Length: 221
Image (cartoon, rainbow, N blue to C red; front, side):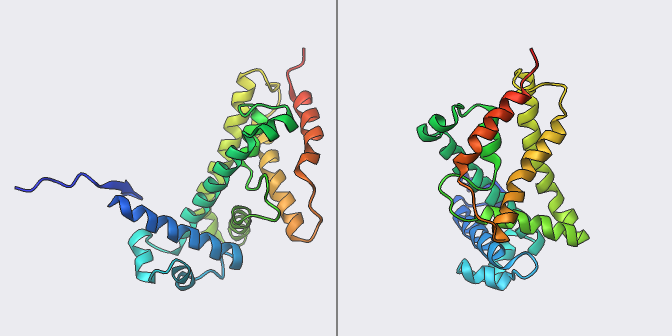
Protein backbone atom coordinates (compact mmCIF):
# COMPACT_ATOMS: atom_id res chain seq x y z
CA UNK A 1 0.00 0.00 0.00
CA UNK A 2 1.58 3.30 -1.10
CA UNK A 3 1.57 6.27 1.22
CA UNK A 4 -0.01 9.60 0.30
CA UNK A 5 2.46 12.15 -1.14
CA UNK A 6 3.57 14.70 1.42
CA UNK A 7 5.20 17.22 -0.88
CA UNK A 8 1.94 18.90 -1.84
CA UNK A 9 1.04 22.56 -1.27
CA UNK A 10 -2.36 24.18 -1.49
CA UNK A 11 -2.41 27.11 -3.93
CA UNK A 12 -5.50 28.88 -5.27
CA UNK A 13 -7.67 26.17 -3.78
CA UNK A 14 -5.87 23.35 -5.60
CA UNK A 15 -3.19 20.84 -4.64
CA UNK A 16 0.14 21.60 -6.35
CA UNK A 17 3.69 20.34 -6.35
CA UNK A 18 6.06 22.88 -4.71
CA UNK A 19 8.18 23.19 -7.88
CA UNK A 20 5.14 24.43 -9.80
CA UNK A 21 5.02 27.64 -7.74
CA UNK A 22 7.77 29.06 -9.95
CA UNK A 23 5.59 28.53 -13.03
CA UNK A 24 2.74 30.44 -11.41
CA UNK A 25 5.02 33.34 -10.46
CA UNK A 26 6.49 33.42 -13.97
CA UNK A 27 2.97 33.61 -15.39
CA UNK A 28 1.92 36.38 -13.01
CA UNK A 29 5.01 38.43 -13.84
CA UNK A 30 4.23 38.04 -17.54
CA UNK A 31 0.63 39.14 -16.96
CA UNK A 32 1.78 42.18 -14.97
CA UNK A 33 4.17 43.24 -17.72
CA UNK A 34 1.57 42.75 -20.45
CA UNK A 35 -1.19 44.61 -18.60
CA UNK A 36 1.17 47.43 -17.62
CA UNK A 37 2.22 47.85 -21.26
CA UNK A 38 -1.07 47.29 -23.08
CA UNK A 39 -3.78 47.84 -20.48
CA UNK A 40 -6.51 45.54 -19.17
CA UNK A 41 -8.68 45.86 -22.23
CA UNK A 42 -5.98 44.98 -24.76
CA UNK A 43 -3.94 42.40 -22.85
CA UNK A 44 -4.46 38.95 -24.40
CA UNK A 45 -3.85 35.53 -22.92
CA UNK A 46 -1.90 34.45 -26.00
CA UNK A 47 0.54 37.34 -25.53
CA UNK A 48 0.86 36.70 -21.80
CA UNK A 49 1.56 33.04 -22.52
CA UNK A 50 4.25 34.03 -25.03
CA UNK A 51 5.93 36.31 -22.49
CA UNK A 52 5.95 33.46 -19.96
CA UNK A 53 7.14 30.93 -22.57
CA UNK A 54 4.03 28.88 -21.88
CA UNK A 55 0.94 27.77 -23.77
CA UNK A 56 -2.48 29.32 -23.28
CA UNK A 57 -3.62 25.91 -22.08
CA UNK A 58 -1.02 26.05 -19.32
CA UNK A 59 -2.57 29.30 -18.09
CA UNK A 60 -5.86 27.50 -17.53
CA UNK A 61 -4.05 24.99 -15.33
CA UNK A 62 -3.67 27.86 -12.87
CA UNK A 63 -6.49 30.29 -13.56
CA UNK A 64 -10.05 29.57 -14.64
CA UNK A 65 -10.29 32.60 -16.91
CA UNK A 66 -8.77 35.93 -17.92
CA UNK A 67 -10.51 37.79 -15.11
CA UNK A 68 -9.13 35.53 -12.38
CA UNK A 69 -5.62 35.85 -13.82
CA UNK A 70 -5.84 39.65 -13.94
CA UNK A 71 -7.05 39.87 -10.35
CA UNK A 72 -4.20 37.64 -9.20
CA UNK A 73 -1.72 39.73 -11.21
CA UNK A 74 -2.90 42.95 -9.55
CA UNK A 75 -2.59 41.43 -6.08
CA UNK A 76 0.84 39.99 -6.86
CA UNK A 77 2.14 43.27 -8.33
CA UNK A 78 1.05 45.29 -5.31
CA UNK A 79 2.57 42.75 -2.91
CA UNK A 80 5.90 42.81 -4.77
CA UNK A 81 5.96 46.61 -4.63
CA UNK A 82 4.97 46.61 -0.96
CA UNK A 83 7.85 44.26 -0.10
CA UNK A 84 10.30 46.39 -2.07
CA UNK A 85 9.05 49.56 -0.38
CA UNK A 86 9.28 48.03 3.09
CA UNK A 87 12.94 47.14 2.54
CA UNK A 88 13.72 50.61 1.17
CA UNK A 89 11.97 52.51 3.95
CA UNK A 90 13.85 50.53 6.59
CA UNK A 91 17.25 51.71 5.33
CA UNK A 92 19.42 54.05 7.36
CA UNK A 93 19.28 56.60 4.54
CA UNK A 94 15.52 56.92 4.75
CA UNK A 95 15.45 56.93 8.55
CA UNK A 96 17.99 59.76 8.54
CA UNK A 97 16.06 61.72 5.92
CA UNK A 98 12.61 61.38 7.50
CA UNK A 99 13.36 61.05 11.20
CA UNK A 100 10.73 58.30 11.34
CA UNK A 101 11.36 54.71 12.39
CA UNK A 102 10.07 51.88 10.16
CA UNK A 103 7.25 51.26 12.62
CA UNK A 104 5.95 54.83 12.39
CA UNK A 105 2.53 55.05 10.79
CA UNK A 106 3.68 57.37 8.00
CA UNK A 107 6.42 54.96 7.01
CA UNK A 108 3.94 52.10 7.05
CA UNK A 109 1.55 54.11 4.86
CA UNK A 110 4.38 54.89 2.47
CA UNK A 111 5.18 51.18 2.22
CA UNK A 112 1.74 50.60 0.70
CA UNK A 113 2.29 53.11 -2.11
CA UNK A 114 3.03 51.47 -5.48
CA UNK A 115 6.26 53.39 -6.03
CA UNK A 116 9.28 54.12 -3.88
CA UNK A 117 12.96 54.70 -3.55
CA UNK A 118 15.01 54.57 -6.70
CA UNK A 119 12.07 54.23 -9.08
CA UNK A 120 12.60 56.84 -11.78
CA UNK A 121 9.33 56.30 -13.63
CA UNK A 122 5.91 54.77 -12.95
CA UNK A 123 6.28 51.16 -11.87
CA UNK A 124 4.36 48.17 -13.19
CA UNK A 125 2.47 48.08 -9.89
CA UNK A 126 1.34 51.67 -10.41
CA UNK A 127 0.36 51.07 -14.00
CA UNK A 128 -1.61 47.92 -13.28
CA UNK A 129 -3.39 49.59 -10.35
CA UNK A 130 -4.37 52.56 -12.52
CA UNK A 131 -5.53 50.17 -15.23
CA UNK A 132 -7.63 48.28 -12.68
CA UNK A 133 -9.27 51.46 -11.41
CA UNK A 134 -9.93 52.73 -14.93
CA UNK A 135 -11.32 49.39 -16.05
CA UNK A 136 -13.57 49.18 -12.99
CA UNK A 137 -14.86 52.69 -13.69
CA UNK A 138 -15.70 51.90 -17.30
CA UNK A 139 -17.00 48.35 -17.03
CA UNK A 140 -19.44 46.90 -14.49
CA UNK A 141 -18.06 43.37 -14.81
CA UNK A 142 -14.53 44.60 -14.16
CA UNK A 143 -15.80 46.62 -11.22
CA UNK A 144 -17.20 43.51 -9.58
CA UNK A 145 -14.07 41.51 -10.35
CA UNK A 146 -11.57 44.09 -9.07
CA UNK A 147 -13.52 45.58 -6.20
CA UNK A 148 -12.18 43.03 -3.72
CA UNK A 149 -8.56 43.96 -4.45
CA UNK A 150 -9.18 47.71 -4.36
CA UNK A 151 -11.16 47.49 -1.12
CA UNK A 152 -8.50 45.21 0.38
CA UNK A 153 -5.79 47.79 -0.33
CA UNK A 154 -7.92 50.58 1.10
CA UNK A 155 -8.58 48.47 4.21
CA UNK A 156 -4.81 48.15 4.75
CA UNK A 157 -4.55 51.94 4.82
CA UNK A 158 -7.46 52.15 7.26
CA UNK A 159 -5.88 49.55 9.54
CA UNK A 160 -2.67 51.54 9.84
CA UNK A 161 -4.57 54.75 10.61
CA UNK A 162 -6.77 53.12 13.24
CA UNK A 163 -3.73 51.54 14.92
CA UNK A 164 -1.98 54.93 14.98
CA UNK A 165 -5.06 56.40 16.65
CA UNK A 166 -5.05 53.64 19.25
CA UNK A 167 -1.35 54.30 19.84
CA UNK A 168 -2.07 57.98 20.49
CA UNK A 169 -0.29 59.20 17.35
CA UNK A 170 -3.34 60.53 15.50
CA UNK A 171 -6.22 62.53 16.94
CA UNK A 172 -9.22 60.21 17.34
CA UNK A 173 -11.61 63.00 16.41
CA UNK A 174 -10.44 62.58 12.80
CA UNK A 175 -12.16 60.16 10.43
CA UNK A 176 -9.84 57.18 9.72
CA UNK A 177 -11.77 56.22 6.58
CA UNK A 178 -11.35 59.70 5.12
CA UNK A 179 -7.64 59.80 6.01
CA UNK A 180 -7.12 56.38 4.43
CA UNK A 181 -8.78 57.45 1.20
CA UNK A 182 -6.68 60.59 1.01
CA UNK A 183 -3.43 58.70 1.52
CA UNK A 184 -4.38 56.04 -1.02
CA UNK A 185 -5.46 58.66 -3.57
CA UNK A 186 -2.28 60.71 -3.11
CA UNK A 187 0.18 58.38 -4.93
CA UNK A 188 -2.44 57.42 -7.50
CA UNK A 189 -2.98 61.06 -8.38
CA UNK A 190 0.76 61.74 -8.58
CA UNK A 191 1.20 58.79 -10.92
CA UNK A 192 -1.58 60.07 -13.16
CA UNK A 193 0.15 63.44 -13.36
CA UNK A 194 3.48 61.80 -14.21
CA UNK A 195 1.92 59.73 -16.97
CA UNK A 196 0.27 62.87 -18.33
CA UNK A 197 3.69 64.49 -18.66
CA UNK A 198 3.96 66.54 -15.47
CA UNK A 199 7.57 66.76 -14.19
CA UNK A 200 8.36 64.41 -11.33
CA UNK A 201 9.21 65.77 -7.89
CA UNK A 202 12.08 64.39 -5.84
CA UNK A 203 10.55 62.12 -3.13
CA UNK A 204 12.56 63.79 -0.34
CA UNK A 205 10.82 67.08 -1.18
CA UNK A 206 7.70 65.68 0.50
CA UNK A 207 9.41 65.10 3.84
CA UNK A 208 8.85 68.63 5.29
CA UNK A 209 5.19 68.48 4.27
CA UNK A 210 4.69 65.04 5.79
CA UNK A 211 6.48 66.13 8.97
CA UNK A 212 4.10 69.06 9.39
CA UNK A 213 1.15 66.83 8.56
CA UNK A 214 2.24 64.36 11.21
CA UNK A 215 2.43 67.13 13.80
CA UNK A 216 -0.95 68.56 12.81
CA UNK A 217 -2.68 65.18 13.14
CA UNK A 218 -1.37 64.43 16.61
CA UNK A 219 -3.85 64.55 19.53
CA UNK A 220 -4.32 68.03 20.91
CA UNK A 221 -2.68 68.50 24.30
